[in-house]
Image 1 (cartoon, rainbow, N blue to C red):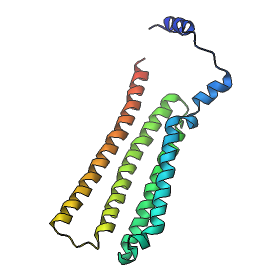
Image 2: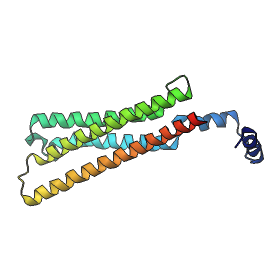
Image 3: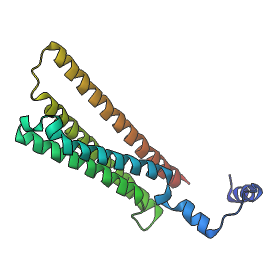
Image 4: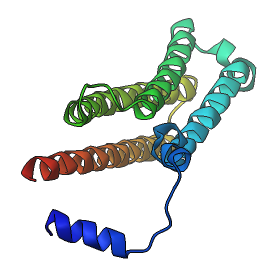
Length: 182
């Protein structure tokens, strides 16, 4: 479609005009509904994980676990929360260049790093949780089967997370290709 055709179609669409203030609110990234959901996820995960840290020592016999495992558990929770916060901050502030092209390329680079950090912190958190809850268990065949099921579920969830992140990154890359072709 040529620019004049597009302009003509736009003028014939009959959409209501927006004030400058309404247009500014619509284009603010911080008001995006996806960011509200991500923020809610960040807050709820943070509250739940901090709640877990405050009660794990008594509720889940943290005093009977090795000290190094208690320390790793705390570190893994902090890294998990920090990764979520870093992701929220990156998505909330996507403009980092002097042009749209530079900003989008920088965003893709940042998202790829976040994908890696997310997978590493999730893996670390999951391994530490499995270690924490299985250190004082005496295993038999049934319990090994349960442990295998938990580990398999954990890897499936990581794979789903990877595919989700990759899909979003690829959508942005496709948009870059479309812009470059026009």
